[in-house]
Amino acid sequence: MPYEWQDTAPEDSGAVSHRLVLWPYRSLPRRGFVWFIGATAALMALPLAALLGTSALWGLLPFALVAIWAIWTALQRSYRSGEIREELRLNRDMLELWRHDPGRADRQWQTNPYWVRVSLWDDGPVEEYLTLTDGRREIELGAFLTPEERRELCNEINRQLARLR
Image (tube, rainbow, N blue to C red):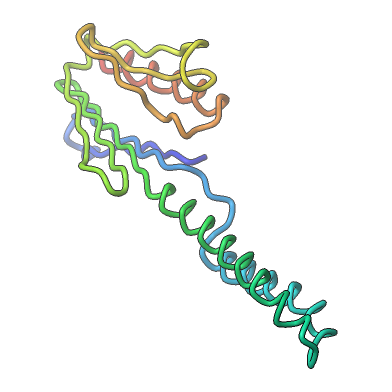
């Protein structure tokens, strides 16, 4: 799962404090990226090896290099979008949501957890759009998660809020 709950209060303190960290799932780790680019370059070079010593090689080589560059660039952009982090801190007195987007200023929202309601919308920008509201402002949460993960997360947040109340 691309999210993780942590209890942040010391056990002997009696306080209740939770922290939820969310991040987009990436199926290709950095080490796999290196192997993928290397294998792609090797497989694209195989047919070009038959053209060694001919002028056709020079006609096809730029296209092969542009294809590898395009794959490299697309994967790098994907990794950059994977740097999104959302952190929800929850205790009896305050619910705080912090979002870090690469290339943008961090955004933060604080409210009293007693008034927070968690909602799943069918008609949002994504399927099973998950929002938190305190009656004054509505904040999206986990737009990069799958619909099943958002449903599960909605239930978990509702359970945590119910335990605090």
